[in-house]
Amino acid sequence: MENIHHYELGWVLEPERNSDRKLSEGHIVIFMDEKRGKREDRSLRKALQQQGRQVIEVFAGPSFLQISSEEYVISDHRESMEQLWAHLEKLMINRIIYIQQDQSFHPFFYLLQEMIGAQSLDPVDLVLLSNPIHSITGTEENIFPQAALMFGLGLAGRKEDTRLQCRSIQVDAETSLQDIVAELDHESDDYGVAYRAGTRYIQQFGALDPSAYPKWNYNIRNDGLYLITGGLGGIGLELGLQLAERYPGITLALVNRTSLPAREEWDSIVAASSNEVLVRKIQAVQHMEAAGATVLPYQADVSDEASMRLILSELRQKYVRIAGVIHGAGVAVGGDHPLKDRTIEEAECVLCPKVQGTRVVDQLTREDNPDFFVMFSSIATIFSGPGQADYVAANAYQDAYPSLSQPRNGRNDDGQLVNLERNRRSCRNRLRSRYPFQSHDQ
Image (cartoon, rainbow, N blue to C red; front, side, top):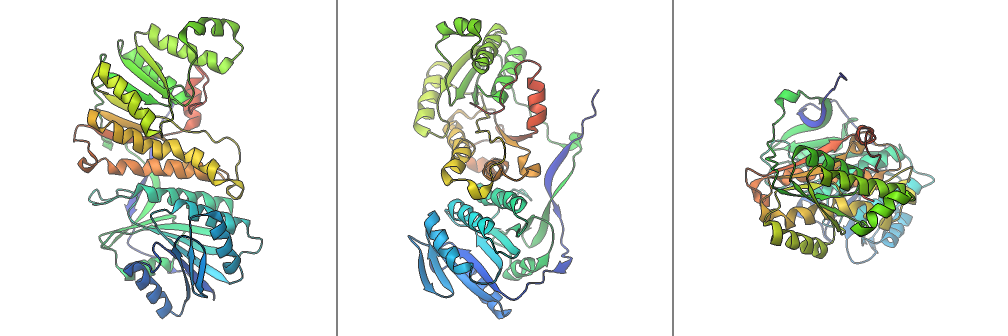
């Protein structure tokens, strides 16, 4: 039997800082949320200036504007960042502090593109300063999974260009300005650092004892209705096959971006064998039905709230309640797609099912109080290579989203919201035993 080793990416107490980061002479650029900045952000500027640092502030606004040599306003459009960078690249910049904003993804995406595309750029200490992204102590009052998009982008960006010495610092309301300034000056290879109630944590990849991990009872029933998004992708179909074989009589609603042909055409399509991928999907659904399952294929974009609301309403009219949700929808990113060459439209295509789609499916199924809501992110958030920045960002969001699974998000103590980080290669290897699908919906 194959030896199976279990690991997790968690947070460990690390109160000590080893050494201070030595900054060369130059400017520090701070990206802020509002035109005049929040009080705590302005305090950071003052603290840095008291250290003798030259500080430039960049505020969010409707369009690009240079207020002075030390103050700029930019919008969330690419042209605005290009205009800003045309000014900044003339200066010696040794640190950029990007403070979480309401609409952070686009500007940060464009900032990384400008930095990676710069011909003459010395190594820059690029710091993401955000509210809590992950639940570390379990006592966090507010979690901001939206900030995980920048967390993932920064993680991927520093792999594409070593000049970007990117790191993330999460702080809560009890984090002192003194701790923030000290952390900024700390020399460390740790990407993720977090402060909770004045205590310092670092993100660390380590061994996991399976016996110590919580045991979930999913209460899957033969007569239950279960929603699977990305239902005609590799993950969705394999899970459908497993459920059909283990729970005869189960009903599976498979939602996918692309639809299956009318049922009366299936036999001729399978006989012709001209579309191998389609044939495998049809055969998989037929296998589920032969095992005793009722399979209901639906075509919809999971990020489209109106379409999903119609599907769920139709399902409830006949089956009353959705007993469980498996959110496996996603857009596969194959090959190398350098961040500097990606368009924001391409990035949003990757983000949509895992960000907006996650929120839509979660919010619309709350009234069902499903026994579980399972998501599939990717090991790319740990071991990704260059060229997958938007994909890493999308999955980083899903890694953070289960931190919202406290009673405040509408689920009671019986409902489980979890994220299964899957090794896509091992998943595909198992699929090959029956149907070699793409892992995402197609």
